[in-house]
Image (tube, rainbow, N blue to C red):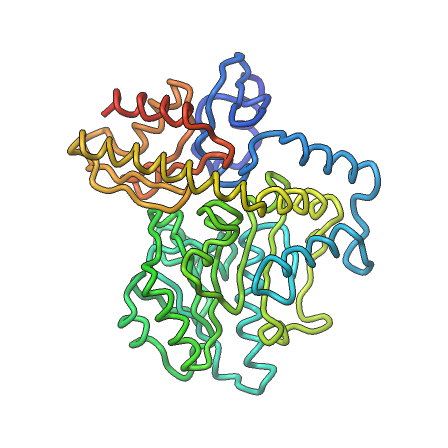
Length: 394
């Protein structure tokens, strides 16, 4: 309890926390101060995709921590070089900018899109169109880009140059495009917005619309990328590539790291001194991320994610057939959402709390959606136990 009291007394009260302090993690399990074990179906919000304290990641961190931790980006380091080349090798991208978080990666993407056109002398092209219900971060630029009013409450005035259209509505996007638009920014699968995948035809139409109008396309894959949807990058499900993509969360499996990736053409928006970060891409963070990429990018690993994701989704669909309160099952791979009908005092938070008591960690979003983003190493028998517990609550 000492850690809880100290946190409540000295840390800003910006989070509603469960009343337990975790002291240890291994694989898909976490243990609290009382020794109780919990099965993790949230993975630190889609972060610890290889589970807690994965031996290969731990070894990479330990080895690098004993070798070189930080020298700044005024110098070259091997881990950063190796990770950048690996990410480009595995993707559409030609260049990578490393940051410390998803919000910072998205901030870099926003800056790159604007500067790309301003370097060409087109200073009137600055507007970025994002999606309603989107989530892109908590910095001033990224919360402005976020299509949820509750995220922006209390932070007005916001930055100029953003507009919002309904997700999966190509006509609404067409109608919003004019000569001031420099980029369209979206998540292939909306996470915080309700675990909503893009329609395949929609993403293809967005790509064509951007091409036809000379607009950059930005994919925010901070939550849905890095194997979460059964492919290394979520956009691979749709056979559509962006001009710019952002990664974070699972990239470091718990170590803070973000990446903004771009084609050679889009990357011309940045040059010496145009953008920077002190801690982005440290040897420690990039060494961990390189080990993560090497594991998650294996075809056999991704095949297992697809199989387990389909198994999980089928089990949720069976629950839906049994319980009328379940309104929808959504998601891709091991990023799944269960929409429930609201009842008095029994919104998503009720189920989160009751499952926590039973030793399962999930979370609720939009008051009515249970989100499941377990480590990608979750087993079917663990899924079965969660389904049984959820069934009993319903």
